Amino acid sequence: MQRIGVLTSGGDAPGMNAALRAVTREALARRAEVVGIRHGFAGIVRQEFIELSRSRVGGILERGGTILQTARYEEFKRPERQRQARAILRDQGLIGLIVIGGDGSFRAAQRLHLLGLPTIGIPATIDNDIPGTDMAIGVDTALNTVIRAIDRIRDTATSHSRAFVVEVMGRRSGYLALAAGLAAGAEIILVPEVPLDLRWVVSRIKRGEELGKQHSIIVVAEGVCPEGSAGYQIAREIAQQIDYEIRVTVLGHVQRGGSPSVFDRLLAVRLGAAAVDRLLDGSSGQMVALQGNAIITKKFSECLRRRKRIDRELLKLAHRLAAD
Ligand code: F6P
Image (cartoon, rainbow, N blue to C red; front, top):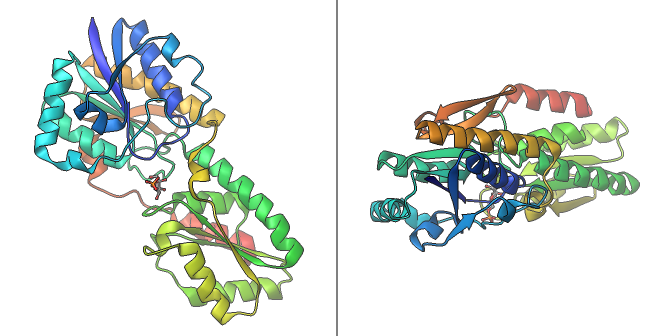
């Protein structure tokens, strides 16, 4: 019987469990055994293995987080750790490894692939910053969490005629800020990919006031100010230039939790099954991805050499619709 390994790595994302269930059950249906590895790549080195049966992955589809738990394991950048991991996985009799995570996790998977251990990636990160896939698992759920929060914040902002700075996750990627800002009708969206222009921010809040708006919602990705809290820093700067009451909400890790949305569950199920299919086919060094409504594969080497771009037209549209 063939044996495959599976792990979750990097920041957790809602839908990782749904992907784990799909991987396990698809593999079992195809007569392959599945070994779960706890705590990501660190768990390979520490040999934290558990056999995954049909029942072991029962009742997890709807649960946030990851039952295998996860880790960010910097140590894996060292070539001796990578060789050690390959040897351990081979000793376990694994024909390959499925890695559920983001771009950092795929870099580690690519290293194992180059060492001759087959790997397939499943994109899962709320940041949606992996080039080559339209969506990653977890993004849709996180967006729903953010827009529900903004809808509530708008109620109180309007009641008090206040500006609210809402800080969302995304150190290098403004996707979450852009998509949530657009979906929630935020007046201002600030992302790390576009240089911050505070004069423009202030003039926009003033213009909103002139138009009779009762609030201003400013969605800021955390990476807009790399040091400290972007939300508080921007609020402070605005407050120095304008006579308008400002409050700050940092949504933080709330965005990473919760039961996955229908979209994330469907994506996880499709990507999980496709990953097993590719690994058993003998493919390696690739991630399964969503393009339009199709599941495709992309080489890690292609995805990892570039950064995913922000859609600047969408950003302009959001600003046009919200306060002009
Ligand atoms: O990569 C996902 C993410 O949630 C980022 O948006 C955020 O910057 C980071 O992880 C936070 O990491 P940690 O949970 O380690 O604080």
